[in-house]
Image (cartoon, one colour):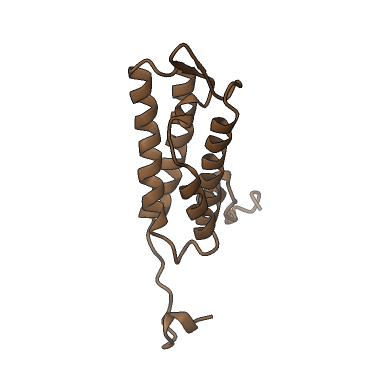
Length: 154
């Protein structure tokens, strides 16, 4: 204890960031973000997305302009079954989220969407880019070789 001068090791605590960094969680978040974009497109005329006088409004207007979101959502859900096997899907996620951010600011500059419709999707996609970077560039732990081909390892 502290009175005897002993130093007690602190057990590593699980944090929210460590949980969010897990590949399967990131893929599920990416799929959810794409599904939210699809819902924003389908619910046109609501606070999520609305077209008025050639300007889109709503908090997800920038996301609604991001076209085909159903395909990446399906890919992310499929890859979430085995994230180590489908590690390359994080490159798709990086490209998609960067495209969302650039699309938001392009359409804001063109006067197509409001500031709220730009900032909300850009911030969420920026957070996902941050999480994707962890999965793309984290140090890999070597799996000890058991002498069996990779498909037969337990």
